[in-house]
Length: 379
Image 1: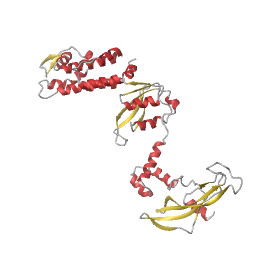
Image 2: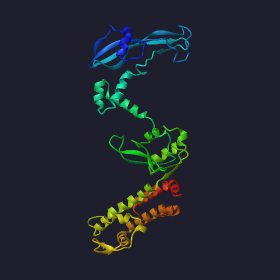
Image 3: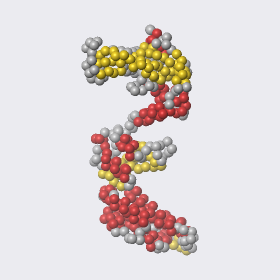
Image 4: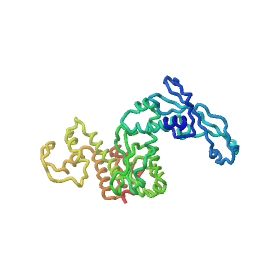
């Protein structure tokens, strides 16, 4: 075995086309750090021209055309010393297309100066629990390089699910601190009633990148997507899922008016109001479907007599005219949704009372903008 082969083996370099100058190893200071510098050349007889694809028939078809000198490549530490290889890469000229190209090696990828062995070390270190700063210091690379390798690992992970569910629900939930934003994105398989997948970002560009991992014919199999009123989800669903019906799920339809009614109750719930304690403590009854209210009378410490749930609600909603109309609109909406009566639903939102709470007016406008998607849900 030649001296060059021994050196390549010690450096864990598999490319036999690299020749290391064994008598030209020196110590040099680069950017304030002491490096052990090795020097070598990369040359071989090319099998074809990467520019035009021609296969050389004789030695004159592709000729050697000097070197690209001092290509600095960071290699793993040698005896715990920072090391760098100054590699002179052979340049070639193709006489068929009159273009030049540079010799390539498995030691380092094109347009990079960190060896693949070093990148492999980074990936191995990332498997243990330690900071990126410690890894960068140990391997003599930047923290941003560690970030890029980590992102590359996450972007090329194998998809856990080769097929999308035909019926799915999109929603978000409050995420942990390791996600991109405050909210994470969840996909639920409506047919199985299970969580299909979770994405650490609900941004449209990130979701589009995620769904485009699935080929168009897989996306075209999706029949229904239920979501909330967020326009970003609706736009993305229409863009990527051509055959799917987009519907607003019932939970978010009810939530719009639920929040408004509760807000109207809170506005009346002032300590100066003699009915403050009643409004505060019987909030669940106000938000309850009136068909589920009982007529059984029980003693109430706030009314100081026996009253039924229906009596309590009737008393509280009649404290304020606007509050009463808002309450009646809320009850009409939840009953229309429960009975899937789209005609009744439309009558409520298109013929609203002027005394209704302003926020309820906004909720109705949102319904009107998405009436087709609500209609599909009530079929």
